[in-house]
Image 1 (cartoon, rainbow, N blue to C red):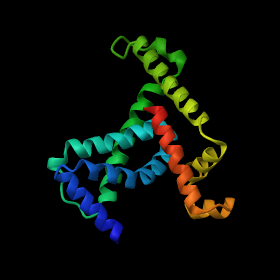
Image 2: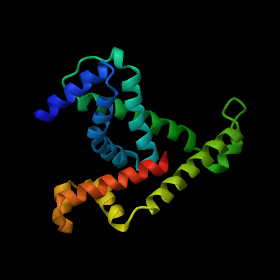
Image 3: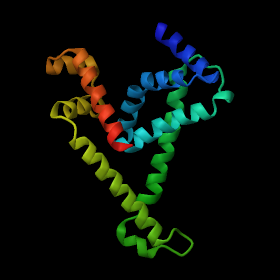
Length: 183
């Protein structure tokens, strides 16, 4: 219950221009949002981008934010909407097979626009691969278990016979490295 009260306090502090409270809420919420996002679209860069957009929006609209009792629920809904939009945009742009690019009418996006969008997507995928390659084998394993297989920290601890603190620290350092490499 103290965590919920702390979240409400942070939320209200953000509403009163406390940038440090925004950072604390970001750090507190990040793993939960990231875990949901990575299970939804399995695109680390897009998930991280959506999380950042949520908190940018919170900060830019801080003077109009409502008082909320369930901060995590509010953030989750914002995140889910942004994620949904990015999924829909991705499907609109990338659901067209390569051989159909030339069949597009002149009213649609140009071939060049679609090609640029496709190349941008490939570049993002390559950046993510390169960032993941910089993780240690242990970091990769823990990220996979936590976010792709959806195991709790306790389940990972039992499965690998390592402490919860080690798991938390390793995942945190992996996410920090990924953020650094992708921004």
